[in-house]
Length: 156
Length: 94
Image (cartoon, rainbow over all chains, first blue to last red):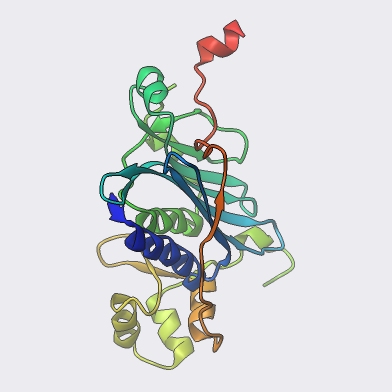
């Protein structure tokens, strides 16, 4: 995904709105940038629940491209559901290391019991944007039964 | 909810039919609002949608959607994402 600066801002603000309209309390969005032109965005949404917090965190690292455009280079999209004690996540980071050690630049996390993963990294598919990540993580949150982590392919 | 019901098992979504009943409209009207993007829902299969309860509550709320702004901060070096990927071999050898 490659965007001009104005479109990038709209995209990130749109993610915050998408979390809000789904009923989450939104923190952010915030961004850090450095002299190299890289920008890291973070936006998170949480739900208060007597049984524990539920948080969806969206983090993306964008690298500069010619003509004031940026390309999404890394992402971590996470659902931590303390109320049902489980976690689901979609990650793309540490490209070279991931390709060498996991044989895949993208990976997923799935914890049917929070903090006790049966596998550290699962085979992943690239998530094209944060909006789809929200849909997938909300679907995991809505899943009435246990997460079907055993259906995934373990990379470790 | 009965006392024996765990809080974690509390209802998390409405079906379009349930939402229609609460709103006093037809399921078709609810589906129209879902397809228009006005009412967020998760499509779990070809014809099955789930409406998250918090999303439904926000939909019926009269509170205006806040204006979000990105707070930018210059740093010396932007941090990389995610936990470090470390192989089991490296952990054993550490």
